[in-house]
Length: 318
Image (cartoon, rainbow, N blue to C red; front, side, top):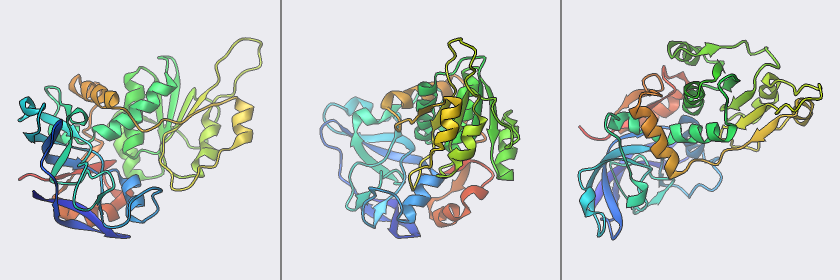
């Protein structure tokens, strides 16, 4: 069937064009996408041609969307009409760099995660980004008395801050962009002086800047030498980097910091963050703006970190 998708045709060149996708086979579903969410750092890196493992141009970009199942193969027929999270189309007549920004998606039914009552299709389109941040929280295992510093208030950093706060930790945030600091304050998060050192139990770097870890580690409290058994501070490397990040070994050694590197997310993480949204433990209100029609994509990618919100979504249905 013919649909339309957001296609990167060359480095820095992106636009909506017709594509062909298959009808669903056994165990598969066809989702009509309502909203797809942009991941600005990763997707701009993909568009620039700097993403390791990306297919050759042209390809369909994006990896987080939501919509309604409109057709299904054998074994999935009873799911027609179901509202679901969708990571993107599995197949098309061109390559997919995850395939999330598409008006329709065909994919295995198990990867289409049913939305709980009370979660809008718009908010659900950001579930993948929220789940990536949630995986970092699970590895860090915060305690309610602990202090957490999140560096970089893009969508992953913003969701990280919301997750750690929901877990009961005291959360402080750092960002150089005034618009992102304003959004953090509006969400009730506390800003911290970037020069402050040695007070955090957990430091989350969500900048995607390879050199940022050098300053990030300095927020971590040193493990005391008092003969007692103290767990060291944790550094969560939550960003996605175009080049290998620079680990400041001497600072890590001196503080006895544990380094944690989350691997993307699982399907269970998607279900968990959708449940958190349904229970209003986290909110997309200040994370997710509206980018309008996908035809606005080139302008939205160029806007980058200047957006009033951490990211935004494209609307595919009228």
